[in-house]
Length: 461
Image 1 (cartoon, one colour):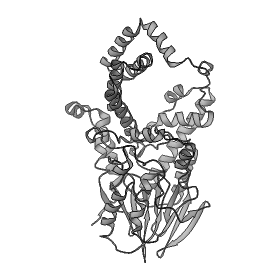
Image 2 (image 1 turned 90 degrees about the vertical axis):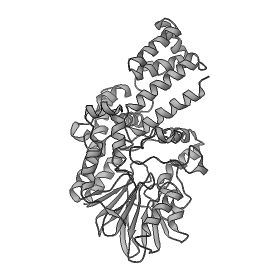
Image 3 (image 1 turned 180 degrees about the vertical axis):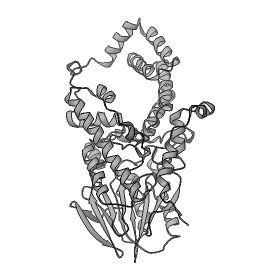
Image 4 (image 1 turned 45 degrees about the vertical axis):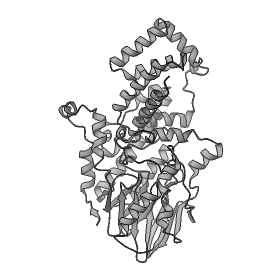
């Protein structure tokens, strides 16, 4: 039977994300970042949460939430999880609640972690499948360009090539691996249209009648251009898709994405705020319950996104480069301390860089960078300044020994540029990346660093 989570959901998350005191860290030998991520596992645990009289959400069965709305004559699912087996496991639990037929499936956007289980939820029937016009546009853009590198980078970001003992979670979901049939890279981040939409939201807002109830679909570009949110007015339940989840938003995914419209993302949260929901079902992480809690979360999310955008534009107008902007733009403490704005999935620095490049492109404004020196030539000159490659290697070893992992990694990059076949610089960089990863709260960056470190170690002669 489902476990009902009342207004304690947000309070529990506050406890889960709070930094542990120094003595506890010292006793465990773990970094504060690792402890904070591990503390999230209970919040991300597998559970069927009763959100309202008619709404149940499967959390932890897949990277993305799967929700069921029970109508008079059938059920409507919102999103379907990443893989058929995930959807099947959630469906088994849902069928303990009701055996009504499936009237419709609604996809909040085209990412495969929300669409991969659609065929299972359809149960061999013929439900309506709703999505927004332009569904899967991000994946379609990659495919039309012949771009595949995002699959490798996505596997690094997701930690799919790491052994289980090296993964904690991905910040907004427990650790999952793609289905074996899709290989180590998987198709998690590309649009999975194995269950193709039959109906499309084409305007800004549309009311639809399904299974004896009325739902409203609302266009809400943010994480993706094809995003929508679902509003159940009778019970005041809102399904946000990935425009809200308990983390600073992934305004730039390090697997590589086109520019995500940050201002539109903030506007989507403002639109959701105006609905007056008493329950908010995010695309990932546990539902937020209670009118005050929902209002606070959406308002803070909107305000934080707007602050980072406005402050970044302010710095750009002052002529700051991206490297300077990441020091200039900092969330105010009252927002940074909110548990649903912790940088466990997205990262503020990455958002700042994305805003800059989204509006001004790759050129940082410094004419020196218009025609940069070839990497190997620069590395040779840096080595010469240090007294030769051996001396540069000694500086890199010293930096790592002193815990200055970022500098050690950057020096290792110079050494690798000079001699790509040399083993020692590759192994030193692997150690530096591992050290950086252990200190990083953002799980996607942690996974990426650990994966590249693993690749360096296995490829070193």
